[in-house]
Amino acid sequence: MIEVIPNGSTFIQLINFLVLLWILNLVFFKPIRKILIQRKETIENLEQGVETLSKDVVEKDNAFENGLKEARVKGLKEKEAFIDEASGEEKKIIEEINKKAQAKLAEIKKQVEEETGKARKDLEQEIGNYAKVIGEKILGRAC
Image 1 (cartoon, helix red, strand yellow):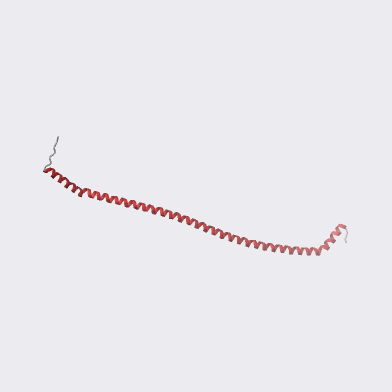
Image 2 (cartoon, rainbow, N blue to C red):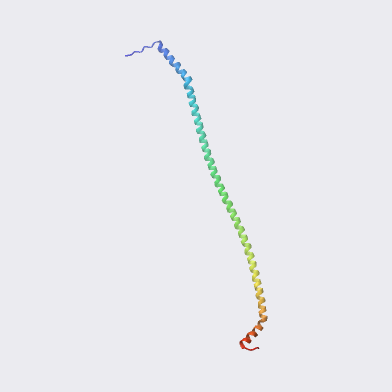
């Protein structure tokens, strides 16, 4: 069996190992850990920024959709208002045309009645002459 007997060199090697460990920690491990911590913080900040931007994009998209819906509703209301206004104007124009047509029809009826009355008077004045002519033709001789 091997037996280890500690002597002075063992303590020197132990002190040498601890000093080397301390130097390596100062020179390599602490800067690497510091860089890793900074990298982790940077990644976390970037992830938070991405989450914030994603939320902003969703909110802006929703706001855009809502604005678009409101604009469509407003446009439809304006369209309906224009249609109602045009319908009212159309009714007014049709009423005016109907009034003019009724007035023209009344005027024509009056004119026809006047002409009929005049023709009747003219025929009544000549009825005697027509009766005489018809009588002569029926009888075949002059009366």
